[in-house]
Image 1 (tube, rainbow, N blue to C red):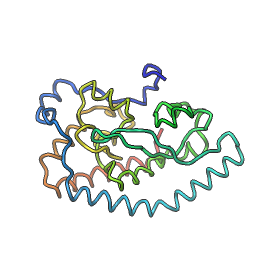
Image 2: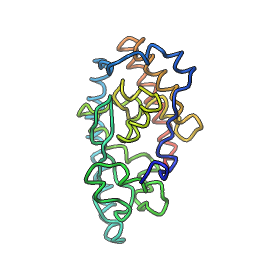
Image 3: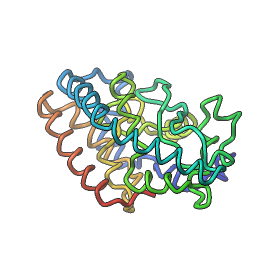
Image 4: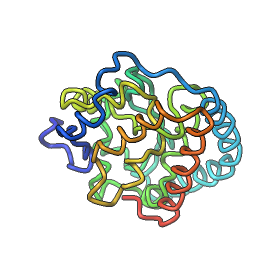
Length: 240
């Protein structure tokens, strides 16, 4: 699928304007990914491990639901997990998610290559399984990414990691946030999802600016406030 035929929801991220470039000029001058902050790193790994354990019953119930739906509706059967290649701090890694769509909407060859396009029918309403609709409503498809946090590929808070071709497009339009920081499950920009501000890069640069200025514990407190705001968004059940 070409980028012209991609659903607009797939890439809402905008280029930084001149105001952003001037205000955060010091960020655009940074040439290497930023070093991790120890309290943030420890928090990420501990919370990811605990939440993966806590989510085990959820994964089990979802697996049962997948099996039952596949038995009742054979075209909806298939694996519960999948991954595609994404970029975080400039490095490519497998981004794990829970499958939302029927197997006939997935390009098998693209899936083997870890190509995001294999799963791009996600925004087609008729492609969703019944379990997939429920999973997406409460963002449960993101739960496997705690494993990526535990591995060190992602952080809990940071700019959302993008599929490789979206990351390249984002760099081409002048953004550096996903090169400088590990991708996060939540971020100042991502908690704007569902509003016109989703995709506005200013929030990512605000976070990087605070990353540079705050003490390690101050940054951890900022992460906690973002997580709280993100949890409130999740509990609204408005995932699309």
